[in-house]
Length: 280
Image 1 (cartoon, rainbow, N blue to C red):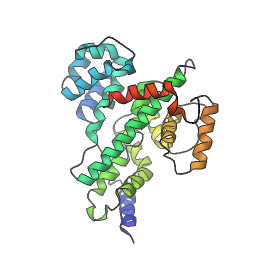
Image 2: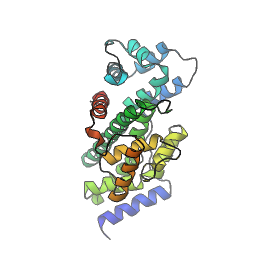
Image 3: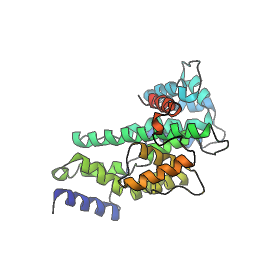
Image 4: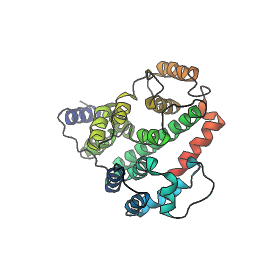
């Protein structure tokens, strides 16, 4: 049995017997989610909570000043930033900005994999948000929200994180780093749902984690998962290339995106760069 096969067996056993150590939501993200659930919470109270994490506070000001928010006048304080973003969006955006704290390991090779996973998730989020912005600009009342989609994209493959971290304990089996990321993604679906349930994320987040690897459009649709699939397609992320191309043709016909090489479209590319700037 090869080292790769051994590692695969170990990870499968850990999943089946519920022995994986699941990541916890960063404290600041947990506080934001809990407090924002209170219908009586004020913007000042939310700003006070976010101020407990200076790095997150700085990121929120950056978000408020970004083209993503569609404003040209700059804000300089956290209170101004929270007011601009608004209570309806602050919950998802603050959690999205805090998530990077989860992708940490003391093992150099594993940290490299976690960095790749995080950057991949960011790219998927940026592409998906850009595609949704294009679609929302041409169709009224889609019911799909850009900040919800951004957070969904960031956590769509979150189950790969504890699988990669578990491999840290099997250093003699780590081997090819590309194989590690491949099997982690392959096995991640059920683990992703467990994590999102433990974090008290709503059912639509669970559905995205369950279904994004399935090359079948949402019906009725489009739904959030369709835009995440579009992002994965843009990254040539599916192994079944024929099915990937057929799904892309379906999405173009549905006018979710304007053309097969949709990332070259100026409207989509502009929004992609705007969203990307928030994570830089």
